[in-house]
Length: 148
Image (cartoon, rainbow, N blue to C red; front, side, top):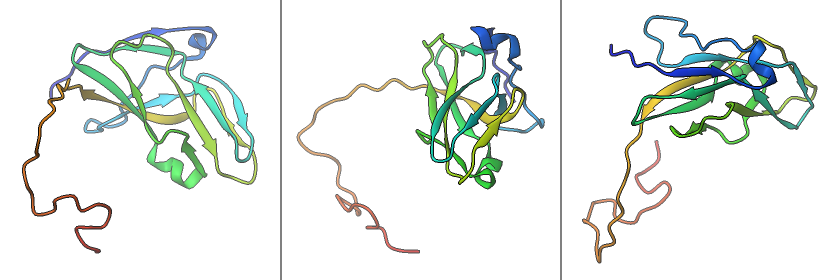
């Protein structure tokens, strides 16, 4: 497995409480990210939680952030489903957590609340054409390939 270096900088007031990202197993596809602040997210509310870190991925790569899979059992979700960190962004990385519980959801410094993975970034060039290549699906939309 190829290992690429991601430069990490502690930033802002939360930087003093920041934990370095960590892969929990040798074959883990994403590293854990830790909250660098305490918060109580009210029921039904959305709140940004900071990690106290800024990242510099290698050229040609960006970062993708998701909640940990165990978060489904906790009744929380990401407000934007998935976070993309552009390769040229150098500010503190935060996530917007939505609390779907009937009571406040506590976040404490050091809680593993998200996972991050490195993704190769491909730049596209859009070419306007008069027709597209025909396929058996054609313009069939949602559910057009059949039900289970």
